[in-house]
Amino acid sequence: MISAMLCVPAGLGAQQLECAPAFLDPSANQMAPPVRPFGPGSYVVEPPHHRWWRATGECFFNLLHPSIGLCGDLTGSGVCESWLRRPLSAGSFVGPVFGTELLDDWVGEEAGYLGGYRLGVDLDQFWGVETRLAFSFIGLDDSPRAKAAQQEADDAAGIAPDDPFRHRFDDGRYADLLFWDVDLVYYPWGDQRWRPYGMVGAGLTHVAFEDRLNRRIHDTLFTMPLAIGLKRRVTECTAWRLEVADNLAFGNRVKTLHNISVTVGFEFRFGGSRTAYWPWNPGRHYR
Image (cartoon, rainbow, N blue to C red; front, side, top):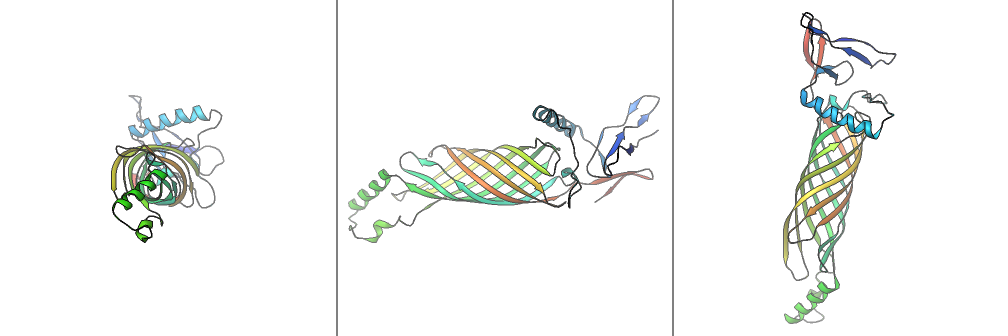
């Protein structure tokens, strides 16, 4: 009975191994389960759901890049391991955000900033899942109709024309936004040091602001963020990422929002067991 994988060098590359499954029972012609490298010198049995995600990703990859071979090598200065070797990630991000109209011909968003935190896990070399919690403060711009309505309200309240209270909104106001969503990430280049991606998600956005008539307006919106971005592995444990996103939100009291953000983020990679198949101790784990 043989239960180990037979790994032999395939070419001159030091990190390239070609693995052939060994027979569990030669008389029954039963094959060992498929395995994939999770880093140089490290092989683990691949779960069925990982094989499904990988096969789907490879189909998309082959359609987009029919002349490029799949490669999981991250050889380069400071990095020589797969992203899947550390499949979990935690990070933060910050950047500008540009808003749209909140209430028709009344008040709209200008520019502001967005920042937050993100957790993620790579399901396969092509697919990942992330969750994001973000905060944003965006400047408000009032329409001429809203400014005229404020003047009429101040006149009706008996406020003197030269009273500084009439200029209470001249210093600007901000809308407060809170985003939370869960996102599906697709990496068309697979397991590369430069890792572009596309992302789509679903979640909630809460928006709160005050208009020219001192009315405090709150609304909770369904959110569907759409984004494209690029990750770059810096070391085995860290990566930078750049992302452009349309934080699309569908509201009740406010209009549909298109908050466009451009963020730079830092990502810390961790997790994942390292399984070494040695003849004298098969299934041994190391980190």
